[in-house]
Amino acid sequence: MLDQHAIDTLRQHTVPAQKLFIDGDWRAGNGGTLDVISPIDGNVLTTIERATAQDMEGAIASARQAFDDGRWSRMAPAGRKKVLHRLADLIEREALALSVLGVRDNGTEINMAFKAEAGSAASTFRYYAEAIDKVFGEIAPTADDILALVHKEPVGVVGAIVPWNFPLMIGSWKIAPALAAGNSMVLKPAETASLSLLRLAELASEAGLPDGVLNVVTGKGSVVGEVLGLSMDVDVLAFTGSGPTGRRLLEYSARSNLKRCYLELGGKSPNIVFADAPDLDRAAKVSASGIFRNSGQVCVAGSRLLVQRDIHDDFVAALAKNAEGFSVGDPLDLASDIGAVNSLVQLEGNIGFVETAQKEGAERVTGGSRILEETGGYYMEPTVLTGVKSGDTIAQKEVFGPVLAVITFDTEEEAVAIANDSDFGLAGAVWTADLSRAHRMIRKVKTGVIHVNTYGGADGTVPLGGVKQSGNGHDKSLHALDKYVDLKTAWIQL
Ligand code: NAD
Image (cartoon, rainbow, N blue to C red; front, side):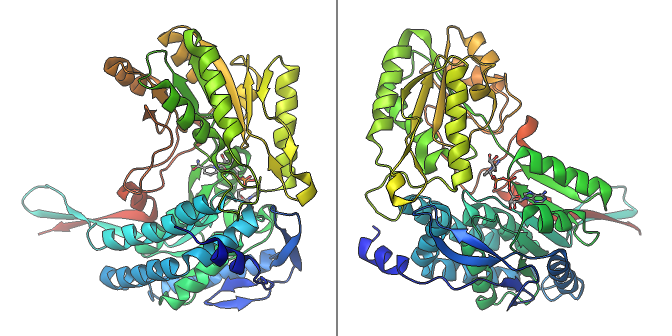
């Protein structure tokens, strides 16, 4: 149970101007600073360095040197495990402070941040710490006079570029397996959510991670992100963010050293409710949370609701009631269910999507507006739009905000066709009491994740990633380790 007094004390702390974390130390950049605007009240919270190409090249050189001299890459896995466990301990020790810092930076409601950011980061580091001395190579079943060994080697320098919605959680999904496997890293956080990741790097150093193994460079994606993408010294790019940036990373790779790019991109996930769903009240409640938590800024958010015609009106009414029941407000107030939208740009984009949907014929059932403007912060009502057609902008484009598009269907075949009428394929859900239908839908809906009779369940043991234009390569689970190792075959004539 979180303590409001402790949160209020932490939110008063002045956040000092931030530096770059390179080679185990804080360094000033060469490009001036960027203001960090808190979405809670629109005030300047602190500044981060606006790193230059030269700063980023310095960080990459530091990671390269650390990898090549073996200070971490050749440490016994059991040694790496100890450091990563110590880091998990430190994250737990600092969990509330890290969470409050992150919330002041990105606006996520504190209960969720505590669990999904600090809590998830600690458990992710523990998971890969535990795994790394249990995952090893193979001896292939070759002819008797041959010994064929399949080694798993760290790839070298991993560049990680992450977004602002859950920086600590998504950052840890990349950092923990990459470090566990023995790589060095350069991390580029989003401009509007750098603070908790800078602190994480400092904690990693305190935990005993050798200097230069984890470097954090803040600044403009279009400047330092590009340098990271084009570098001949970066061997893998691990990215979560938007489709257009993902495409750029593939171009950078093609123009440089053909580095592997793992892209976790957006979604427009279909949440499909059949009339025979076991508990429609629960389905309405979970569906509302599945789109509106964290103001809809969740990559797997169920942003397209497909409802069977017979139950459409009752289900939409129940869902709208749930939406109106959420308390939107100060994300550091434990009584709030939903915090702030990350930035003014994002908020204005959300409102623009609602206006476009209405012009294209959708009806606004609830929400649609900015609220609490007097606070200076960026808050938006949970919004439900009905009468949406599958080809409409609101059904095709990712809003990444608290906006739900409701589409009606009659038959199972039609539900499948609408669900798959999307460039994206990240997540989805089906609600039905018919076991055979549930399994048919699991097979037919083209997404990386599908839920049945729930929305949004997840665990570190199961992979998360998309198909189609939602990207490739999965975070989480033992499968994620494969992204950060190379296979090397040794063929020995006996
Ligand atoms: P974004 O693509 O604008 O930015 C993501 C990161 O890329 C930031 O660190 C940014 O600085 C950097 N970047 C921007 N331009 C760059 C460039 N030219 N070269 C290199 N790096 C560059 O995305 P965003 O707005 O920060 O994040 C929201 C998006 O992330 C949404 O589309 C959302 O669906 C997606 N997302 C996906 C997942 C997933 O697991 N699939 C999870 C969370 C968010």
